Structures are given as C-alpha cells and as structure tokens.
Length: 261
Ligand code: PGA
View 1 (cartoon, rainbow, N blue to C red):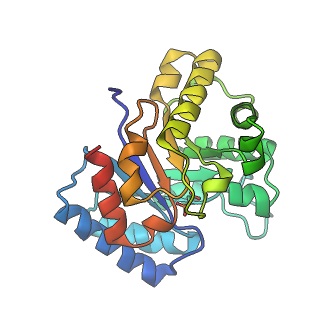
View 2: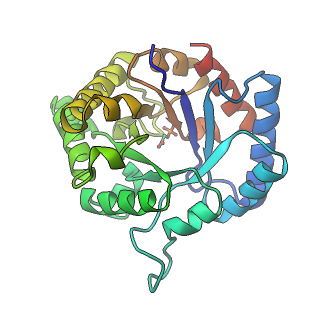
C-alpha cells in the first residue's frame, strides 16, 4: 500500500454558474460530513469554471471546509497583453491548489499541443499550483494497440525540459478519450496497466522518489459504482471525475465508495 493520499477531483467542465457552484459545494460539504469523510481520509477537489472560483473560495474559507479547489486551464503567459487569458498567479491568489492541464477537450477544441501543455505546466509550477496533467489515447489507438506508446509519448513531451526536483507532487490523469462522457469505462485492468506503465516511465526518467510521489488518476465515466474497483490498483491513486461530480451528494457518495475500496 502506497502512502500517496487518495485524490478525488471533480472537473465540472462548462457546467454550473457561480450561484449553482455555491449550492453544489455546500451540498458536497454537508454530504461529506454525513458520510463521515474527514480530512486525511482522502483529498476532495472541485474544479469549477473560472467565473465560479471566487465564490468557491469565499465559501471554503468562510466555512473552513477541508475540500480544495482548482481551475480547468491556465495561460502559459505572464500577466500582460493576452486577451481572454488567465494567469497562474491569479489562480493562486484565489487559493487554487490544482490546475488541470492538457485535458483532451482542450487538446481537441483549442488545438493544445504537448509543447503548449509543457509551457502551461511551467507557468503553473511557478505560481505554486499543482498541475493535473491529462494524457490518454483515442479509440483508434486503443484498437491498434498503440495506446501505451501514444500515452507515454504525450507524457514525455508534456514534461520535456523538467527536472525531477521540479516535478515533486505532480498529478497525472490517465483519461482515455473514448471513455470520457461516453459511459464507456476502461476496465480496472486497463487503468492499472496504463498507470503502471506511466509510473515505470517516471522511474526511468526521474528516479524512484519522484515516481513514488506522483499521483496517477484515472478519468473517464467514473461513477460511484465503479470507482472502488478502479482505485483498488496499486498504481491508481484516485479519479478525475466529470459528469458524476456535478451533484454534491453524488460526488460525496463516489468519494465514500473510493475511500472504502
Ligand atoms: P466524465 O469526464 O467523468 O464525464 O467521463 C471525465 C473527464 O473528462 O475528466
């Protein structure tokens, strides 16, 4: 059993305005309490749209909630003339702990390359945000059995130029594109196979200590009834959850099931 803390992160994507966010986080906090989940048993993170973050911060600080929050993306640039962008330093001023980088929806919709992903990771680290780096193959790549090479290639290119000392505490989310929002879930064995391959590559590139401190999540149609099987694998340290994180009580039930694995 590893000493990595189980991480359950809810990626809301473009759902919930700031008023809905307040209600969702309140209900999540109550449901976590009812489920007797306490700080230390796991880490629970919500990842709302940018426009909700200030409201979530006020609630988390005001009610001294133990859950954490983060952002779904970040600019690779320093503050300046970049219309529509959000700097990493702004997110850390808002108390964000995490930032999702390289989600497949951004890679597809916004043409984010591994090079851009690497620049965003650098920006996040310089503002003391923990990146949740997303990698994962398409259905075609899985059918061709090139999924491991492809995913490890994304990993290597997204982390190009970083030293082991910079990556301590990194989070990697393995999210097969074909399993996102489709109701199709990779089997626990598929998730375990990829997580083990990712950790082995981290050992090769960065050494045992960095690899051991990296948490590897699985994402793609994770639900209350499949999470415990998925996080039971030694190398899977939690889940990045989309649809099933939108309702506070449902997400709390999922967290409880994960902790009880
Ligand atoms: P899903 O999304 O749980 O709705 O499949 C996961 C994700 O994209 O992070």
